[in-house]
Length: 286
Image 1: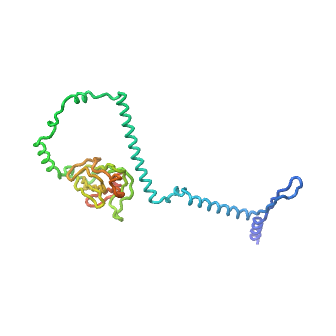
Image 2: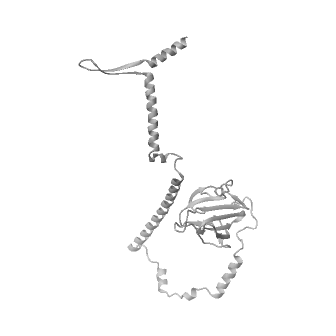
Image 3: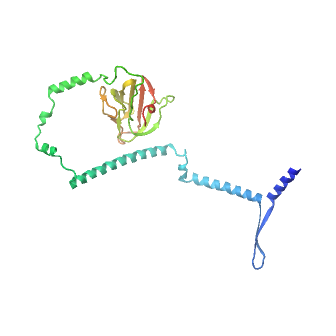
């Protein structure tokens, strides 16, 4: 009974209404009065909170502020951001090249760059172009040597140690759109790179195969030591042919330009070892 009486007392205090009166100073008449209890104040505060949440939610949904929410941005907007970032990188590189060119032109005009004396002497010396051309014997020797050495994998060591590790370089700069996944039969990385970008070999090796793809692109395969094979797909122009030796970081192809690509064709890079695909990110820092 004591507990019930205490609860009743608390409930009565919450429901007890207070009166706020505004009096006329001269006549002491009540000009305005307002009755309010603690319970009604709690209801009013809760209603004000709900109204504020609804107004803020409507403001976010109906304005561009919603794009700043994590996970709300759609796929098209993400692709536009990637393309714009690549264009910005290309423009920054172009601006730096132009600035360096203008700096060199100003140096030449001011006379800060002195003319090389050897170049001046060479410019006055007549050159016999015919003597610089290769003779028939030299051309025949070059052809025989290239045919003999074309398919010799001289970079492959006779004894390969299992603990020997290769150093792989990044084949191209860009943004990874799709990672390596055996479950999805995605045996390589899909990389969005800048137009007309240079594609380089990830390590020393020998070009073993080149060809065309159904989408209009070209592919090139390079064999490395320890059973590694790197594959470069969706290339625009190939700079190497089967049998040639390449060094790590050497240009072997180029990516599409906006005019050459009929539809978006991101670059695809695959890395295989002993006939099985491996995750390139385990060997290369992208």
